[in-house]
Image (cartoon, rainbow, N blue to C red; front, side, top):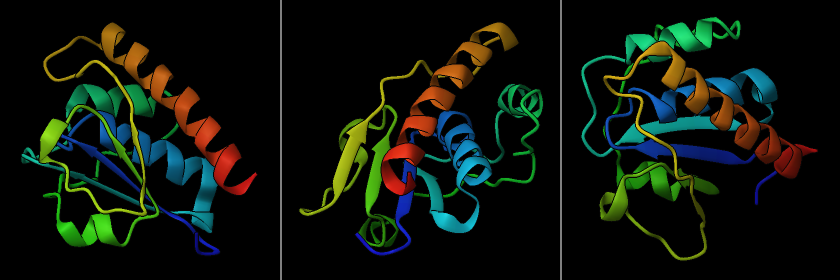
Length: 133
């Protein structure tokens, strides 16, 4: 792994889970980790309930824009974390892959999204510990 690892979070719409994870990782790691996120079928905007849940944590993801998953993004990443994108995620040997099983917050209420957010936070905190100590 390079001195500054790159982590890519992928979910189907790149509007909820992957955006929350990217927000936490940027917040917790600062510039010590390069953070990317993408989706296999990106929406036109981030889920407003996910934005609200992250704002409660003091993290603003309101300006994030869902992006299409590209082969290049996977190739430049050291760690690829998928969140329910299934077989649509490209696979490259030599990359570290993790699949985080998380409920999709699309169309859900704030209570449900807070639970997903808190699960993501725990996982991202563990990832930061592992990658940069």
